[in-house]
Amino acid sequence: MGVFDKIGNVVDGASRSINEKTKNMSDTSNLKRKILYEEERILEIFQEIGKVYYKTPENVDELKLLVDDIDTRKRRIKKMRFELQTKNGFKICPNCQAEVQEKFMFCGVCGAKLPSGDEDFD
Figure 1 (cartoon, helix red, strand yellow):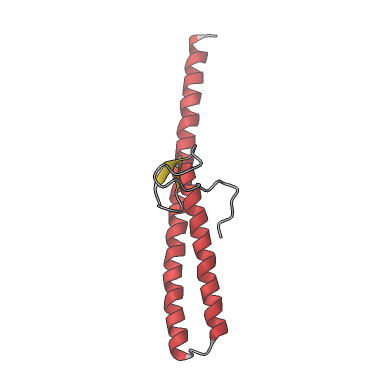
Figure 2: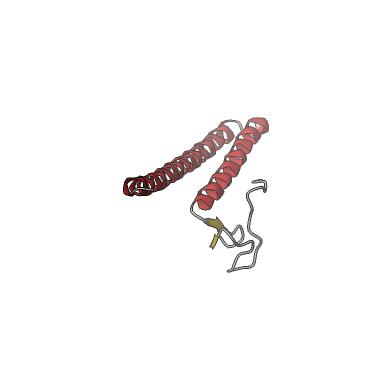
């Protein structure tokens, strides 16, 4: 193997590493943006609930639809936060909200079982 081949291999490895880091940063940014959108939408729905209740408090069906929409968005946010923390190599304890390294199954602060990637986000 010649000197130029070795240099080429080093450059290729560095290039792949930079591409992976850039993709990870892009994915992280997209997840944060999606979480922010969902949180803003939840606030808008809360305002809509107030308006609907003020105008027609007996309209329980419409209120239930809005509440269900909030619950769905909260599950999405929880899943995206899990993905975000996983990309960063951490998990968030569902009990005490502590950041714990991804390799652990239980929280080092409170001892609660940590979520795994195949669990539901209900």
